Image (cartoon, rainbow, N blue to C red; front, side, top):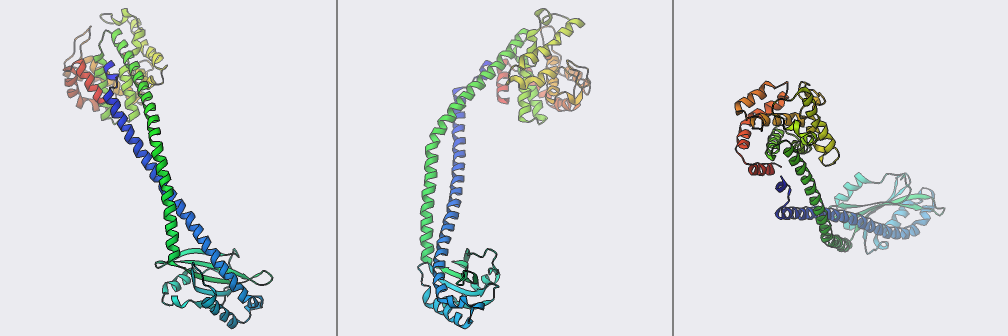
Length: 438
Ligand SMILES: [Fe+2]
């Protein structure tokens, strides 16, 4: 077992490379995620800023219209609608020249949405998509907010600012609304896209540069942490090894019993689809199941022949001794279920808690099958090994009483091969087999 617990430099190099790949993937994923979030954030902010700038320009132009139409706006019912239409026509032709674009349609309504004057820019006479859009998306009057409403929309390939502008009379009361589809000049869009692209490229470059600078720092820290973790793991594995070997020596046995029962138990655990945590518990428990025999006196451990009832009772104390030893270690505590339940019987006649059926932890029920089979099928200082058929026959008679039927049924189909491999393998070969399993 000591050799088994050592992590070689090759192992460490492989783990280091795996760590390198893991950090690279994680950092790349996070960098891409931050880039995408940054891009989305910048796009939304720039779009809002661009739209607000357009709104302000349109409102500046609308203020000029307000001056031209103030007399009509001050008159109830918006005064003479024909006069208002003339003002609107002139404004559309001469009064709304802007760098950002021009109004494609402008409709003047009273506060209830009744049209008082309307004008369409001739340049957009052959643009039916504008009519379709306005029909579906016209702002509803009276407007709830009473303020300016606006939205950037794309009709066909071209962007428009759809805006609702309130107009007030001399007393400051809103008496009319102008609904306008403002066609944005392509050069304005081009400049905005260029500005947005440059800002975005700068932001993404900053994110990538930050990730690039962080990578070696994080890798160094992670490697240091990983080295510490491996050292700790080695120390824990050595504890497992030392305790396992100590109990084997006290029992006049060699490490091969621990190896065999662990191999049997792991194979059986795989067939019973144990999860990762249960397998960890099973392996630790298999190695440490008899660690409590350290606390049993030699005269009892090495006594030839049968034990008296008093001696048997004393021997049974090894389960509690094992609990006392293992429960002091957080890392070894995983072994408790197997250690504490490996002498329980499915019918409740085992020891030391007389647990019955499903009350016995599954890993202990699995280990009990592995442990008893190995005890029957291998030689001990005080007995010969039983032939395979005799051992499995005795096991079968305990199906449903000593052993959980389900566990036994999962074991016997693999027992022949496992017994052949384990009975013909040296300690070194068992060590290698176990190393591959774990
Ligand atoms: Fe035991």
